[in-house]
Image (cartoon, rainbow, N blue to C red):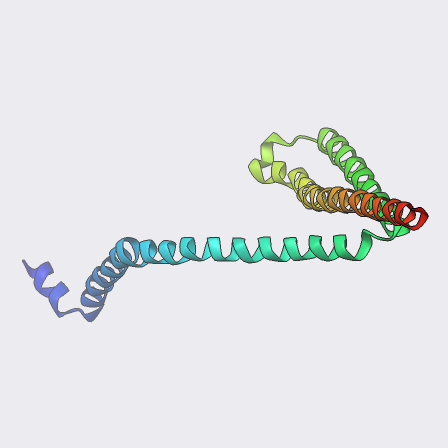
Length: 165
């Protein structure tokens, strides 16, 4: 009984008790109120940012197609750019794989030593993404160039036929 009275008179005991009650209330408030609303807000923004990114990529592709479809040298340059990027990506993937296989395994240091060689693969994913985008642009430019060539050739044939008759 004396210990209880001594604790009630001690301000540090009150501070400790009230502090953890306060932290417990804030933690439950955070866990059950703030986290779901934050997730709702973030998940509501993801489609917006996704559509903005899609518009930017589509605009980039349309600009490349419009600016390059009539020039054969530019079409060849876009094809060469794609193949050089694909070659660099493949060489880097092989390099990262070899480095991952040759990296000494250290079981005593735990999982952190195993994450170091995996960091080699992060640039590879970026290169793959850029290669895929460049391939789509190259295919669209090639298709637009072929269609433009057919249109120019067919219209010149029609003009030649109407001029001779």
